[in-house]
Length: 527
Ligand SMILES: *[C@@H]1O[C@H](CO)[C@@H](O)[C@H](O)[C@H]1NC(C)=O
Ligand SMILES: *[C@@H]1O[C@H](CO)[C@@H](O)[C@H](O)[C@H]1NC(C)=O
Ligand SMILES: *[C@@H]1O[C@H](CO)[C@@H](O)[C@H](O)[C@H]1NC(C)=O
Image (cartoon, rainbow, N blue to C red; front, side, top):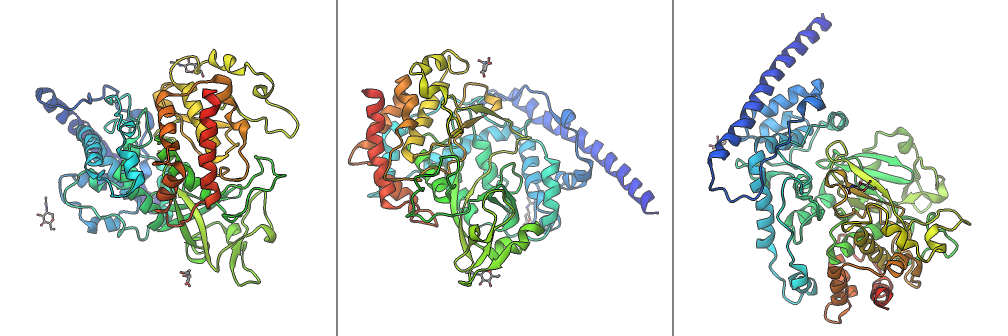
């Protein structure tokens, strides 16, 4: 009996789905036709010529119904919070994607809108050095006009529904309603911030300067409910409700070092701890350097009982919770390195600091390419890497694609500067978005091993600069600016970091070290 019902149900779903599909195509075509007639449009974005990718992807039949529910909610009609209550959390994403698809054409305008909003909100704060910096002409250079080739998502064709992520989501069917409050008017404002962040990614940057979405996203990272907790090799991963669908979810960097501790001298860089404050500081530094290649990171105090133990479905992890003799809540989890009570993570008494990074678009939506850093360390206690023994190593690199053309080599130099300022030796690979080919910025992921030592400047990190003697002119000019007394990197960093919930993020000696290192950077390529 059940089987028959189920089968009937499936057939029904299939039929509704087919109808929806054809409706979708029709609706998709209509605005395009209208637009053809409308020559007055000043939008610089051409509609995408790419074929619809539905066929290839194949719809997950299990989720069709939910999609159809969304579909029946015509975007222009009222999306009441009432209907949202029934749709599990996935609705947020599906719905948002739906809207993107329907409003593909408007999506272009929305991109414009996000950029406009950017301009409107950058009102300088009096006496703020950071605002003064961002008002400087060097920080006002604009991007070339963006075409569909230059944005990560062509919102009307590229965005697909990810069934796997949605399955995960089914665990968290309760709640979440308060956190997403659709307004009657469906403008870009009603998209969740993570989606607006993803839409903004382009060939040149992860996010634009003064983008209000980034501040809102940072706030989300601190305030949103944690809905799942998992763990991979010593890093506890927390997932926030609306930020659920992720290949690399927000992670809780176990803070095993206090702010004042330096990395022990006998530690190899690859066995160094990962520091949550380094992840946070790296995001701010990257923004001040105007690279904007680090996904937003915010510090957060997490209640270990309420937000980790009570949330995790990982029984093994759950079992490792205990109360320490000092009456603190601790757990050590199931990791390969530090798994014993001596290496446990303990709260104070039940609160623990962590850094939460906004995830990048799901790999199913936007593939990334991983590249070996040409100046990668040997990761062997005795062996040396080629760049360490060959002074002409850069010549070799310069002749090897993709470093032989375009801006990739200069991007490596930018990354070198960034890593040297932080003292990060652990940069073995880097990533780019596949869509943009070789002509794109490189993403600075995993910065947790920066800011280990403030009393030591690791000159070997600068080797790419000293071997190649090249740096982007704009980077050079900004570094000069940041070395000036009136701007001063350490002061800017302090001002930027004070906004984080876990402030102070860096102790003074680390800030001072950055000023010192900045002078060394310039010396290294200017001679
Ligand atoms: C949306 O719903 C509200 C209240 O339910 C109503 O006042 C409003 O007219 C509706 N808007 C549209 C576009 O249907
Ligand atoms: C953490 O959560 C537990 C359980 O809900 C609660 O009893 C405790 O007061 C919370 N701690 C803090 C510091 O809010
Ligand atoms: C991109 O770089 C790779 C080297 O990794 C090279 O094989 C490829 O031809 C380059 N593509 C273009 C379009 O230059």
